[in-house]
Amino acid sequence: MLTFSQIIGQEKAKGFLKKVLARDKTPHAYIFSGIYGIGKTSTAMALSMALNCLSPVNSDACGECRPCRQMKGGNFPDFISLLPDGQNIKIDQIRELNRQLSFAPVAGKYRVCVLHQSEAMTSEAANSFLKTLEEPPSGTIFILKASESLNLLPTIVSRCQRINFQPLPVQEITAWLVKERGLNEETAMILAKTSGGSLGLAIKMSENDFLDKRQKWLLSLINLPAMSGDEAFEMALEYATGKAKSAKNSSDGEETGVLDILGVWQNWYRDLLLVKDDCRTDLLINPDFQYDLKNTSKNYKMTNLIKAMMKIDQAQTDIIRMRNSKIVMEYTVICLRNLALDKIQTTS
Ligand SMILES: [Zn+2]
Image 1 (cartoon, rainbow, N blue to C red):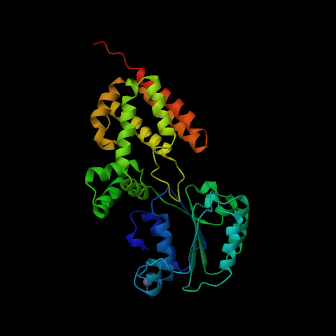
Image 2: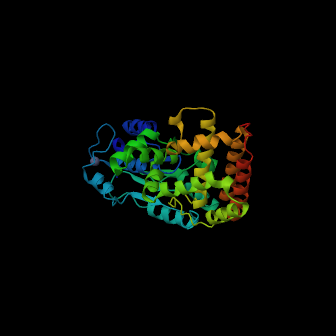
Image 3: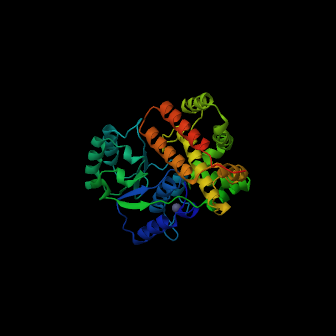
């Protein structure tokens, strides 16, 4: 779909791959690790294109020749994507892959095979895939996408060239959203900051009213000390039962809406800490809430802000571990309310 030169950021990863391509001796397996939405799949595609291009320029694809056009059109037969079937990549899928790989590439010199969410391989599948890696079919390059390479079998990791992808700078995501999606500068910047450096996530958030939801979630938090215990419980229940849709219901992330809310709240306490400590306002993730942040931070003890962040961190871990999200949210909201009520005593 894209050439290296069209991919945003990731200079180190692209530079490494171009160097490898120039040597004409490519490792047969890679692990592309890093968070969702920062260009791992695009880079895998660019690598496939550069490997098969009939007239590459500076180790990058020309974008014009037949294999390049096929890649761009999504119909290059030697580019294989393997996705989890449900929660896992299963052994049957690896067997089917091995069967496909027993034939030579049909359209180009190299076949590129991308395993999305490779951590989702069952142990049977991983052991079977390990055998494939040990005796790789010629002309086949494997790319294992993973959020953390540590979640893979060490015996698989040791047979792959590891390439780490970094979150993208806020300015680059902001500029892209302004140019390609026509967003205004402020909206683009808030999305870029909230996305944690993931362009993919920022795009999704721009498409699903995320900013409206964020505003609602933040206002609930600001109003928390004024709520009765019952009202706070009700709010926790509403948020826990998934009335808030997720911003990242993608192939790469199974996060629920609750995690989106907790992420926004986590950023809020982080901003409160920064404001309380008189840090630079350009570091704020929620610069449009500067006024509320200043007002709210006055009432908070520093230690309570840190405690609130730790409570949210614990809630995120609990929810990822599939604990009952209703109980987790109720407990968390009540803790956050108590911390908000434990105000600094002013003498005035
Ligand atoms: Zn080409």
